[in-house]
Length: 397
Ligand SMILES: *Cc1c(COP(=O)(O)O)cnc(C)c1O
Image 1 (cartoon, rainbow, N blue to C red):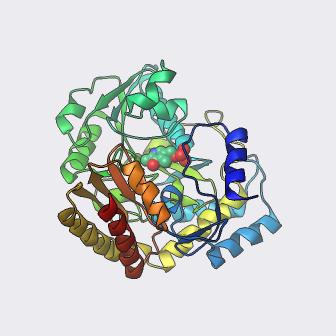
Image 2 (image 1 turned 45 degrees about the vertical axis):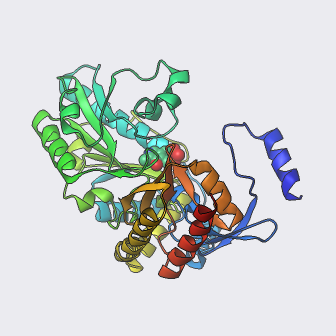
């Protein structure tokens, strides 16, 4: 099938909820992707912060193939070894005590919300609890996750959503404090807001919210789906603040392409929340995803991925700062590690479309931010290549 035919057929067969770029990707290798015409693209999006080790990573692929030949799925009615090894390792690197594996990020958020509600229900003997979320947050597209997503445009057609959610301003502690009442069971936010435009939490905000939660027995839920798994330069972004959540979520790079998410909690929360019958999943944590997570975590540790991200992330940050100085259309740069945004007063969708023509994949966040979430294995030469290609685009617009 040629490219145009593929696109026509896709438009005919798939539900139209994405305005896709006219690009039919065929295969990948390292930090490069190739379309069906053989054209090469430098990938600074990694399938939306998923492909931490890039494409066609031999050791990872071999681990998946070996598990496929052994056992794919069992259901959660029985034990399997790969997922237990993955769970132990994830708990070791996060310092959390209990994990539930899901099939996506949104589903991890659903589980986190249910855990917080059940914790408060167990303590108080009644329901009706409230959650405080943040404006400009993004937690996913299912009804529960959408209910805590601070984007009116995403929410409005689906109202009424889950009741009992109030929105504060991210990094504005007073706005959070003002919403707390005796029914508040959880405060949820992304340690670094992703879709909302790459806004890292301030240390002051993290510490004050943590203290407030401790004082009022409110659970702090940190969404690490995008900023976690090494992307911030720490395995989980909250580890860079010295502030630990009660519940955290993971997904995206957790499986590096295999659909898997997780919500984790401390023992204290596990002991006083979900019990058998409260929650479940057919696929979640099957042997296949267990093997994927186990290998991802093994590779991240062995390759010292956080140290690499800190180093290459600082280099990328400097280069993006230089772009902001050079181009009038760029007004700011935000980000840490390998999660960066450039604020732009030109149409960012046009910039990413033009970048594609030059063989560069970059995505956007919000309405005015170019987002850089490359594979974590990029090197300086890839940053230089990206900057050269992006500069060509910026010179032309
Ligand atoms: C992508 C994302 C989600 C939703 O994950 P899905 O796997 O798409 O359901 C939730 N929270 C954050 C911060 C995300 O970036």
